Image 1: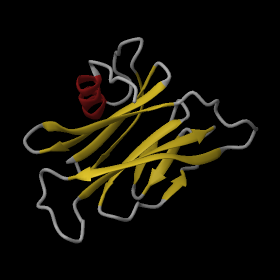
Image 2: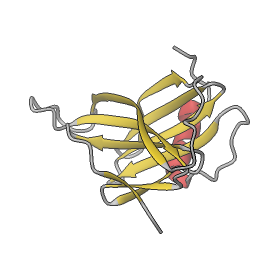
Image 3: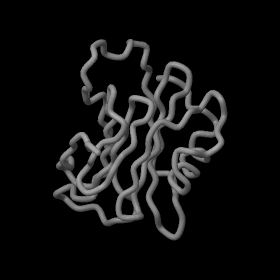
Image 4: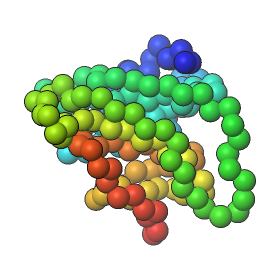
Length: 151
């Protein structure tokens, strides 16, 4: 597993609060973020040949629920058409909501490769993918519907 960038949690919190257009380290580039209901969020970064992301929950302040990293040494898909590919899913338990046997408070993230797609529609929100990658977060077992948001 790749080593996490030392500023990942701080930079992710800044992206969640201010968006992708923040000043950042040259070796930790913000790619995408998703915030739902003002209490669950995730931010995705490029760090060398890795993708790193941090998941946060809000309970009087954003606190880190967890982070993940994967290596991305394979080239992007070839071709002229726009395409969407599921890349990696992770999950963990919510810390701010009571755990239930039915798993309603699981927190899931999904990294998507979004070739030639600027943004996605995830349920009722928009997730930007300006660098060919997007990330989404949700609670519960079922993933929300994802579609290409056409202007």
